[in-house]
Picture 1 (cartoon, rainbow, N blue to C red):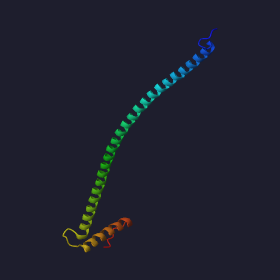
Picture 2 (picture 1 turned 30 degrees about the vertical axis):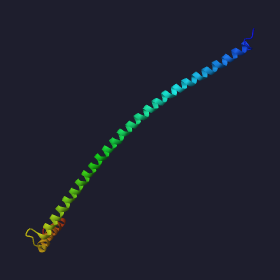
Picture 3 (picture 1 turned 135 degrees about the vertical axis):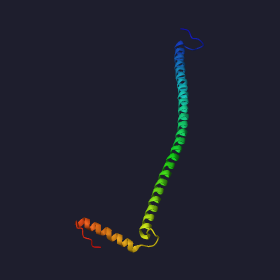
Picture 4 (picture 1 turned 30 degrees about the horizontal axis):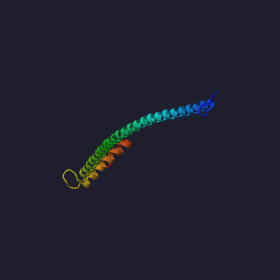
Length: 133
C-alpha cells in the first residue's frame, strides 16, 4: 500500500474511528442537553402550577378562617345572651321572693311560706297528716 502525504492507511482508519467515537459522544451529549432542557421546562411549568395552587389555597384558608371566626363570635354571643337572661330571671325571682308583690319586705310572710313547705315535706316523708305549724 502506498502512503498518502506520509500517512499510512491503517493510521487513517484509526483516526477516523476515533473521530467517529468523538462525534457519537458529542451527539449523545447534545441529546442529553436537549432532554435536560425539556425536563427543566416541565419542572418550571410544574413549579408555576404549584405556586398558583398555593395562592388559591392561601385565599381559601383565609376565607374559611374568617367564616369560622364569625361562627365562634355568634356562638359566644348566644351563650352570653342566654347567661344574661338566666341572671335576669334569677334576680327577678329572688327580688320577687324577698320583696314581694307590694314592694315591701315580707320576711314574716316568707318565713310562714317556708314553714308550710317544710311541713308539707315532713308530712310526705313521715306519712302523717299532723300540722305542727
